[in-house]
Length: 586
Image 1: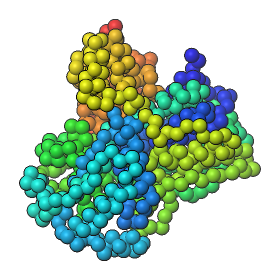
Image 2 (image 1 turned 90 degrees about the vertical axis):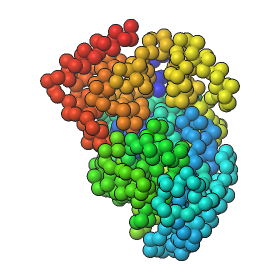
Image 3 (image 1 turned 180 degrees about the horizontal axis):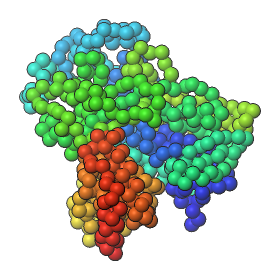
């Protein structure tokens, strides 16, 4: 198999190739288009100036939801679309997307009715917490709009259960319960979509750390962000799916603008066993005193809290500010007054920029989360059209991609031959459907010598793809890492070699769940660095550079408590780790 047929390639292998479509931006919306076009047998190239899904797509609230609060803005079609897409993701990616029982604490009966009405008619109301009647009406409408492809029960409202009386503040009298969904590893779903696309159309390819420098005629100039080398490819169409960077990319490509604005959403991940146990698998969905909607739910063995909604100008220059951490902690104290919260509970923070259509709305929360597809025709410099994706939200990526794909197909003079609507994603295909089938699947995995607990972990992580992976890992020696035993050296080597890893933080932050779970220590990071260096052929200098850069990113962007990498120690330490890793793999 030649290099260009592999899903994940470096720009040098693309030189002078022609693609029917080049997609700029490998977040969830761009990858959705890549997957849909490849399903129609259209040969595509998708590129991103960073890692796959490293922008807003790796920083959502990890909820797959219809957007209950959008009903107040009259966004009925968006909610209907989003609830339907939520239901489809529960069917198509059940290994990663799971139901999330959600509870809304309510303190009064009539509160918020006038505020909701004013918002619906475009007015700015005074802030007041919504009461039982307003929430009941909203949830009834939410159930109706989400009836297509329904796989979960409807809502119910009751008096506060006995077990929850000590969880919420004393004023809470009722709780409303409904179901949405959550995704354990959104970055992995993006990689699975890329893999599915390249299986269906082997001439499609994906390149990360590959920046588009310009478009003239039908030629796009690409730069390898690792080496600085420039290559050229030709195309018949271009898709601009760069989210909050849409206008900047349009300027490079010779397209129109401005069309988007961004608001950042910061999230906290807490180590708080008492809160996690009290939530009992449910998300608490509530309003803070300033009217912002906040969420808190168990995320694996942690608790995820979000989010802020702050306008930003430069999506490349965002971090979770200390004031945002304090704000979210104060909200937790307000809603759960019987528990203690502090910065010591925070093991990880992350922030993304929502790509919103430009708006004159007074507050970020009032800006529509809807999406649209726009076309920039050829001009004096550029001979090919640009299809732009404006706005959108994680849950609705498939429907937005379908809309954009339809436009591209028309521009190419081709017809749709298949739909992604009921198409399983990655490890969601052929997933065991019940307990008996799951047991038979686990027996096949353990037949290679793998332990049952490890087999269950891989099944939860990779779905049906866990079976061939288990056989591969068992053959190469599936020994747990010393400082991060949830993963093995063989598994990390597989991720490095098969999923387009370029930098250490690709592996630590996006290919695994170690960082977001707060499991990356100085020792673990050094151990993982040694394994990545061996797998990817890094010398001691490159290994040190990667270790230092990853540690800096974790400290400064994610508030992980790590030490600065000492330049006089790290290279020799990594070299010894690489030697030990090599012995473990033999």
